[in-house]
Length: 292
Image (cartoon, rainbow, N blue to C red; front, top):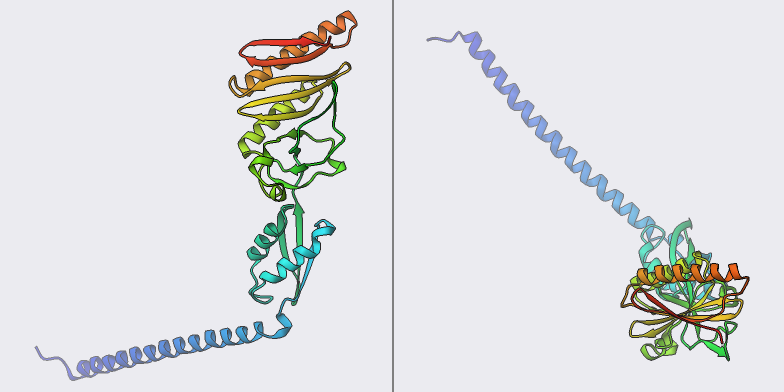
């Protein structure tokens, strides 16, 4: 079959145009990629040059929210770990450094103030209880709670973070004398009074007794799963013995029920509560002694 000359010329011309179009497209793609690489490289170069200018070096840390006696220490710790400038410094490095610097630091928020300084907001730990490493101070049949010698503040996890102060006398108090044996006194701060689970269990027992109308003043951790709770009445301190064998929840239920019962009977008779001790360590039976 013979193809007309006009058709052959048209087909040949279209093939030539197609090859030229493909060639031009490839050139555009190559040039586009080349320009893209040049642009990115130029941007990185300029950015790198700018960030290494002295005007962007961080040389001032503004500590806010921390106790005055540790502000300078925290500031020095933050400056030591800055490895970079305004654009490349590590927030996490500063946060970790401040938390390691002082046990009172709970949370750290870092923000930029200007090209050469940072603002660091420090949130301190909130006291959950006082923990003392000595034994309760008995004066005859009276128990005094004035002294804060060998006492420390712990947070809600049982972490010891600072010495106790006079402003902390109204929170739960624990005596844990075996902490001295487990940890040298010089390094008690930064350790734990108990595991988080155990501490929160004891806090729950303590607070539940308070909410039930029992005027709890302190709790002694004797070791080997034995405890003493000290409650105050008009006739003096009542020592409440309990342990881990029967379960804290069961012993708390027994304590509250017994306490409410004897308190009501005393009120009916117009008497004050005359209890010396209560023993919850024998199952559902509650043993007690009256003041002689």
